[in-house]
Amino acid sequence: MKSMKFQWAAITMLTATVLPSTAMAETTPDRDDLRHFVLMARPDPAVWDGLVTDPQDPEAAARVFIEGIPGAKLVAYFIAAHEPLSISIVALPDTRDASALIYQRVATQLIEEIEIIEVLKGDEFVEVLEAARALRRSDSYSRREETDSADLSQE
Image (cartoon, rainbow, N blue to C red; front, side, top):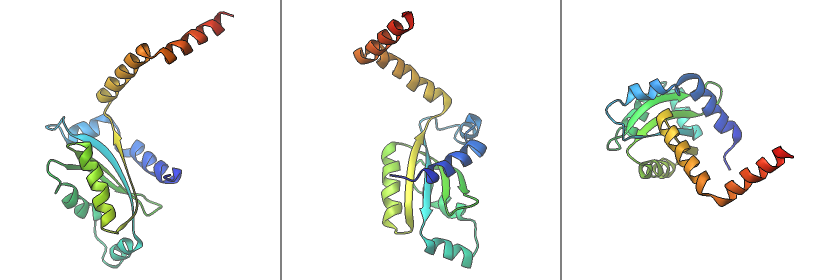
């Protein structure tokens, strides 16, 4: 189970800086087919030691790696201010690339913890909500709950 602190660090940073829908839309205007993911990684202490020994912007290395995946884009890259955590927004052609990315990064033994979460743009989320509404209409259990709720409100 992932630590709640790990997830909240990413969510807080994204909410404050990246998630306005215009940020993602402007970054990949010609690739509406790409899927967006938040990649949170806690690099091994040896990585941080190397950066302290020879300070450099880790975004450049992340960009080379991510954009080495055919069709992928590094949309945004951050280092958490108060804990050793890197947070990226990546656009990938499909979810298999996201899975492959996780296993490749773990195989390097340079990452202690990694999590990837697919995120949706507003219009994509509306499609999901419409599908959920359609499922609700066809789900007898949901209809029973709605009927039970209506019966309780009439009492």
